[in-house]
Image (tube, rainbow, N blue to C red; front, side, top):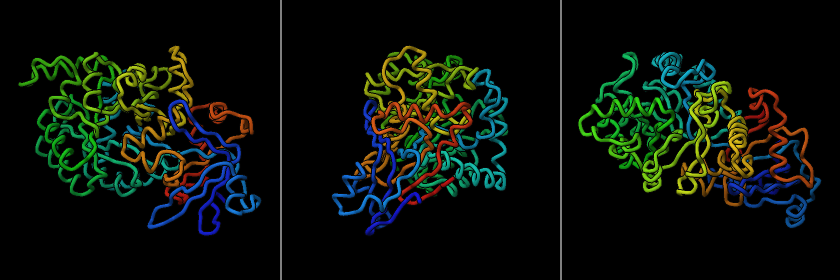
Length: 438
C-alpha cells in the first residue's frame, strides 16, 4: 500500500529524493513522510529518517512497510501544447515548416466537440501517469478544446486558447474581435486557471496582445507565448512587424512584446534561446520568466527542432527565473524524466560545468511551482508543503551510502529507449490522494 494511515495521519515510508536548490538535493535511504489532512488540504508535518521519526512519535518502525523504488516530488511542466500530442514525432525540418505541415492541420481538428472530449480524456489522465501535476498549457484557438481541457485537467494546470488573428491559415484565423472576446470568455469562465496565450507575435496582432495583456493584469492572470526560438523565426517576425504602423523601428523580437505590455512577473516566455543583450535586460527588468524546452530545441537527429541550447547561465547571471518544460509537441516525449535527461546530456556535451541532473530535477519541480505561484505550498517534499509526490521504479543504486546525484542517475540509466521514461513512474499522489497507480 502506497499510503498508510496512522493515528489520523497519512504516512509514506520509502527512499526519498527531495530537490531544495539547483545544487542541493536531500537523499534518504529510508525516509518517513507524515502528513495531516484538514479542510481539504493534506500537508506534510514531518519528513526525515524513518527510524528517528517513528521513535519520536512513539511508533514502531515495523508498522510501516517500506516501499520499493524512490519517492520524488511531482513534476511541473511550464510550457506544452496538449493539442499537439499527435504530432510529437512528425518530421521537423524547421519550426515554421513543421507548424504549417503538421501542427496547424492537427489543431484544426479540435473544433469538433467529440474529438476534443476523447483526446482530453486520454491526454489529461496520461500526463498524471507520467508524474506531471501542474504547469502552463497551450490549447488551440477553439473554445471546444479549452473547455475540454478544463474539464479533464487537474487544478494545477493553467490553460489558454491560442490567439491567432494574422499570418496563419484561413482555417484557424480569428478576427481581432473574436480573439479578444475569447480572452474575456476564458477569463469569465475559468478565472485564475485561464492563461492569456498569444501564440506568438507572428500570428497575433499588437492590438490583440495589448488587450490580452491588459485583461491579464486586471485579473491577475498568467500570460504565455513564444520568443526567439529559432533565427528564422526571429527574422520572419521582424520582417512582419516592421511593416506594421508603430513598429517600424523595432530592434528586437522582445521589444514587440514590451511595446504590447506583455512582459511582467506573471509572463512566461517559451524557449528564449537567441537573445541580444538588450533582450536579456528587458526580461530581467520586467521579472519575466522563461520556460526552457531542451527536448524540443534539441538537434533534429534527437527528434527536436534543432533550435539551439538555452543559456541558463546567462539567465541566472541576470536573475531571470526559469524552469524546464516538455513543449509537447515540439518535444517528442511527455515525461519530464526525458526532459531532465536531455537537459543534462546537452549541457554536458556543450562543456557546461556542474551536476546538471540535480539542477534539472529542481527546475522540473520546485522552480516550476515557484514560477506558477505555488512555491510556498508545493514543489518539493518539505514540511508545510502539500503532499504531492511520485513513486519511481529503481532496480539499482539505492544504497545507504549513495548520493542524491548517484540515485537520480541510477533511476534515469534504467531506460534504454526514451519512450520508456514514462514507465519509471509507478504512482502519482496529489494532495494526499493517489491519482495514478500502475
